[in-house]
Length: 124
Image (cartoon, rainbow, N blue to C red):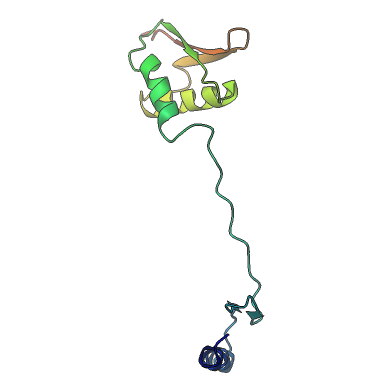
């Protein structure tokens, strides 16, 4: 490390110690100064599908579903059937404003699709 930078670093460290701060500084040589523990950044989770593509896939089947109708939604190659079911239920409740009593879903593993049935409303 350059001598001037080293002096500036020592001055900064002494100032931080004077005001009793906790700190962690890693200099260009990779040496850690201070008592504060460094935490590795969390890894971002990677999604099996690009953002929005699953909702778009589900919407094309469900946007016009009528009471009493059953729709079969094929799964995407990179997606598990349970994830499709979760996202489908979220779409039904948020976008179509249906409660969980208005529809049911069934995972058909033989043909690798999700069956969604919207119930008829019975007026009392």
